[in-house]
Length: 329
Image (tube, rainbow, N blue to C red; front, top):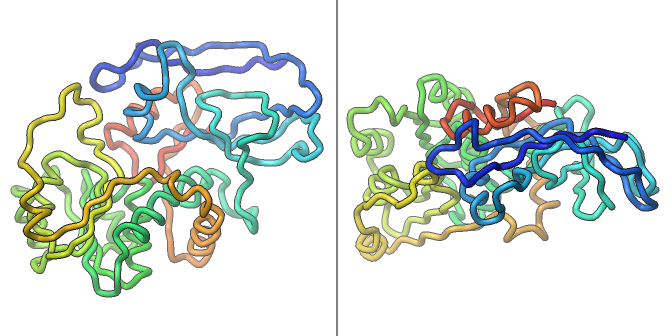
């Protein structure tokens, strides 16, 4: 019998997640039935969406939601031979049994030299989020000025690089000097540490005195209040996340956005990447090509050990990572 470990959510998070909100559980898995396969996790993802979606999708005691790259270790399904790697929405587990439904193969042409963990990052859901959220909603044109916050994260770092591929000027905001240096390294034209600037308004104006055509929003709150004021007429805003507000039981009051949207004639649209599920193959193929060509660079913040998943998750929400936060089992 295989003993599977899993992390469950003891209670819904009140404010920032805490160690006592999680519990490590062990279960013996049954023998495989015909048509089933056993998978072992290799890399697991921790992402900002898990914080708000835990309340929407989970009840107390459930296994934490999330995706992973897993390897088939035993199979009674000829379509899934032993040794194959798949992306699965299996939650925070070390092993699980599947009938094959919902398993996603890595994009075709994946070279052995490329880390399979990228299927959870630049060539996975975060990369697809950047790809579709920027190109479909912001529709950047050559010489547009694109603003990205949380720019050194898994999504924002890819957004900025895609914008550069499209011939845009790219401005990024991040929360440390090391992150700002990373943004410059991967091609951002301007970058600043929002925690140390004396005025967010002045930092945004200095980075792009002419304003912004496109704004890829990951943070919300006070940053959004400042950024909306500096959008150009007919600017486009893609709302991907609001990480600064996820731990707030009651959203903080802020300036009303309607006057900016009205008088600047802005287009502001929220999205969930699953909207383009039928085009994931297209997006994954393009992202993989850009990575192999060196046009999209990546960085992974790796936490070793399944036992450290809660710490990796909490650290990611605090902004401790540069690039994609990954747990290596």
